[in-house]
Structure formats: structure tokens, C-alpha cells
Image 1 (cartoon, rainbow, N blue to C red):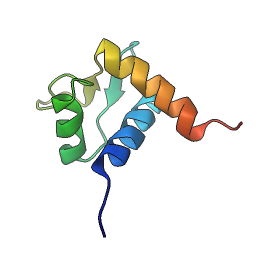
Image 2 (tube, rainbow, N blue to C red):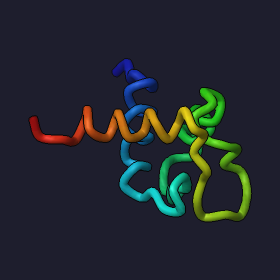
Image 3 (cartoon, one colour):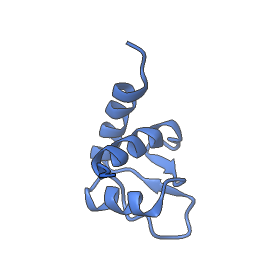
Image 4 (tube, rainbow, N blue to C red):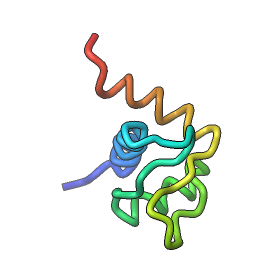
Length: 75
């Protein structure tokens, strides 16, 4: 099966919006490969470290909210 990793990344970023705290931090319960791709895309700060959460960039924060409502909101 050919998997669209961009769609997985978008869904993961949207789910990060659910665990948002301190205005820009999200719990890092997402697969490491996904968080690394989100970091490479400039949507989160470097996920490597002992912290249990990641910091979303300004762009990542905005996009996570947009994707959350696009994917999960009822019309």
C-alpha cells in the first residue's frame, strides 16, 4: 500500500491541537518519524529531548488549529 505521509503528518498535527497546553506546547505521543517530519517542515521545534511535550512554531500552531477543525469539526 502506498501511504501519503503528508496526510499522516496533517492528522498528527491536528491531534496535537487536542493536547495543547501553555498556549504552544503539545504532548509528544506521536510516532518519532512523524515528529521528525513535522520538525523538518518547520511546524514544531526539535522534538529530541527529555521533555514530554513539543513546542509548536507559530506556523505549526496556526496550521494545527486549521487542520483540527477541517478534519474533526462537524459541518
